[in-house]
Every structure is written in structure tokens, then in C-alpha cells.
Length: 416
Image 1: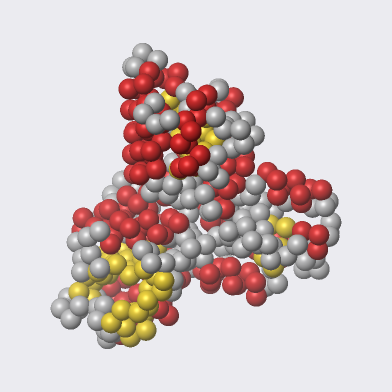
Image 2: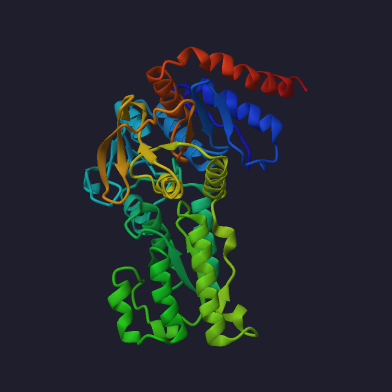
């Protein structure tokens, strides 16, 4: 699926582009998860092997900017945020794009205000079957500029296949997230389905699968997250697990393993395949790669971590979860959050609030800073974070010399 997308140049980054080009040259099969090390003497940056724009995001950005350029005299709308990055969405707004609803589904513009000649862009997360139909009824074809990620559509297709085979679809995701709402909408066309948030909820579901809980209790735990007419006595006999593509891959696998074992206990080894479907092929490659690369960062060691990305980005939050288990971790949306050498603003995942921390940067030298970013974060923002920290610590002039060895590697590769 490799291809080059037309991405606005202001999303690119000279620092990150150089590092990534060198790593591609050295490790074409992407097997080495060790970080890229930018050694500036007193400050050493370790950058994850994989981070930043994924295939689906670059595809979405290319389509959205093409929609704007091809329709200068028409109104252009996005159903909701195209991706979870404030800078990208703000730039689209500056170019005249208007958002029809917030990410939680709250309408900002009534659909009755739309005209048949309007352009409506579907975000990378996809949208519900119902919204597709509403737009079509108004004479708008949302498929003309549909930026839905191919890996999200893969989950939809897998869900349909499960339904055709008589399986119930269990979706691992956040039920208010637009991707999960879209997957639920598509899945219920062909199968009974329910949404579970995490491993603790999977344990509750496993009890129902084993017959250790009364069916009457089911709605108490899963109300509002099941398809219409869901009957646990009938619909939990055969299941398959799919996921919101930005969830923690290891948790999806743990959930799948847990539910598989519950079905084994209920039905035995000989008939397990009749009751539990293998759905490992629904995991998004970029989510898995970025999380694996983050583990590579952790193994390399460091004094603290900076994770760059939109504060409502699911895939970014999981990178933070991994890192904060082992070191001080600051989830920042851009370089502006690094306010001073002794002050940083960052999102606390547990409270959901942006807070200010003082003395975030250790006084020891050299200090090792791990850096990664979400799949919807432009490399330019990571570049700016590096430059900001380097400026505050007085090592900015060392960035260019430190990049020279990476340039040589990339250059040799290009010549060969």
C-alpha cells in the first residue's frame, strides 16, 4: 500500500524528514525498533522508530486539500474533525472549511442548511450509515471526498463477514469515539453487536459467556452499547472481536485471548472455532508499529518523555499510557506548551485537564529526552518541539551538525 501523498509542505519537517530517511535507508523492512538518537551533548533526543502521519492520515489530508482546491466557488464542509490534530483542523477552517458537528456527534450546523451543490468531506474515522443516507437524501454524495481510512473500512468489511457467518461482533473501542460509532453503525447492518471499553469490561463479558452471570444483568453493564434487540442468551453463543483501530493493540489482543478462553471453557476445544472467530487481521498496522516503537523507546532508557499530539487523539493517548508507566511523561499538543525550562503545560490523562508542571526538565547533564507523536501529528510539530527544547537548553546550534551523519546515510541510499 506504499505510495507518496501530496501533503502541504508546511506539515513537513527538515529534522524529522532527515532522521526518517536515514532510518528507511538502514532498515527497509522496518524491523529495528531502536530509537533514532540526536545527540546534542548536554541534551540527547531519542525519537521513536515510528511515529507521525500514517497512511490513513496522509490519504485524508491529500483528499481534503484537493476538495478545497477543486471547488473554489462552492461551500466545503467536514462532517467533524478530519483527524484529531488541532493545527490541521484549524488550517482547514482558515481555508473556509466548516464543521457540521463536533467529534461527539453534537451538531454545529443543521443538515437542513446544506444544499445539493455543497461539498461534504467524510473524516478519516468514517461515519455512520445513517449519516451517509441523510446526506444522500439532500442530493450530496459524501463518497466523492471520502477520507475514511482504508484500515477502518477493513474493520467494517470484517464485521460484515462475521455477520454473514452468524457471529456477533464485539467491538473494542470507546463508544463515544466517532470511529467506534461508525463501526457500530456498519456492523449492526449484518450482525448483533456490542461495544466494550477495556479489559475489565471484557472480564464481565467473559462471565456472561461462561454462563456465570444471569442474562437479566446484561443491560445493567452494556446498556446503550448493544444493537437493537440484542439477546445475550442467543447472541453470545458465537462471537468475533474487532477494534477501534487506534486502541492499544496489546489490550485488544488480551481481550480477544480472554474471550476466546471463556468460549473454550464453555464449549470445549473441538467446537471452539464454531463459537469464536479469529479476527487478528483487524489491527491497524500504524497503531501496532507506533506502540511497538514506543516500547523500543522505553527499552533504550531516558529521563523523561514528550508525546506530541492532539489532546483528543486516542492513538496518542495510548503512547502516553505506555510511557508514563516507567518515567515522567508530558503529553503536549505543540511546542507552545513548553513554556520555559522550568514550566510545561500538558494534558493529564487521568483527570482530563491541562495542567502546568514546574521543574519538568531534570538538572542533570546530559539529559535524555524520549520523543514520539501520534499518527495524526505533523512531523513539523515534533520538529518545533525539538527546536524549542534545544533553544531553552542552549544547544540549538548543535542540531545541524548532529544531523550530518543522518544526511550521509540517506544520501548514500539515494545514490545506490
